[in-house]
Image (tube, rainbow, N blue to C red; front, side, top):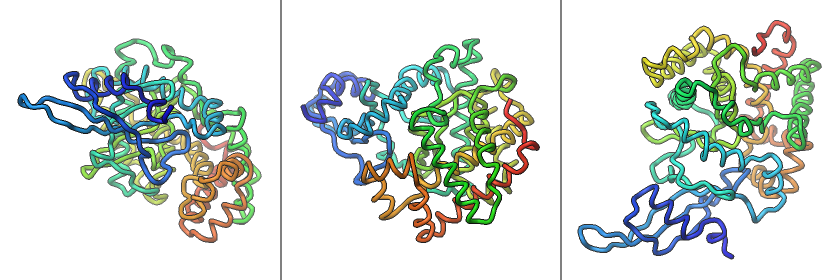
Length: 404
């Protein structure tokens, strides 16, 4: 069986066309090709699905081709497949687009915040091809315009969650409890190995920088307190993995969030904090904090509209919640930066070999990170900046606001 027919059947192709175009066309042929020469994600394979059709226009039969983005289980890599099954990453995204997203789209008046999904299967998801619409990644550091465009998209996602829950009279987590299980920050299996490896690296870097990293293990404990629903604050569906590759823009600065394998249910400020630490320049994040929170909040109220704006967190609650979530955002950057900021030959070397990647990602990344810090001053500066900030926070843990 070919990869194409293994992932997409002729019935699937017909259904995709019916949902995206119309039903008065027939499939002539369909093919899959790699979406990019470079690997664009870790936990799936990515393809461009091309469907050739016969279609009548003005009484004449014409041949046309439509393209889609297909995200699929990596059957060609059994060890990676086993890890994905272990952490239920694909299963979680399937649940999002089959259950959660349709609810969020119900009567949502805000701008689109994710791609349209046309097919959900156990092994594959098919979306509109945002690349053909001019959407692309921005790069590892966003300027203020792209930061604000992303916050607008995040506000639209959160507004859709708050609005649908107001209508239902129940939280989505109560309706779909099994689908909101945490995936990234858990003390289980190899995910705990990843966190432990990140903590060890942070301690080593702090020591090399002449900083007191003795309380970093205590600081890391704050991470687990930040990702649960609040008992007193407004909660919403959070994307929970807002690094640069999961945020796309077109020339008009319209923004789409992609890759919902990690979504969680918690205060909206969690998404804001993690995004700003991962994608905003340090100086922008600090100097424009109030302006950025206000920008998010104003958009949230606008997208909720007059009927539901009273359900939004107040700006005071948002400020307090963001203050509580900053340490988690910083820890997220400390954990993610060594991997997501890799580029060039070292990135290809690590990502291209599964043994090397597993050793780097789960067990010991110190030597590779130190070597790359010598080669790449931006890599070095960004990692050292967040480690230094986390050390500062760790030394005053008792003074930091605790998520509640």
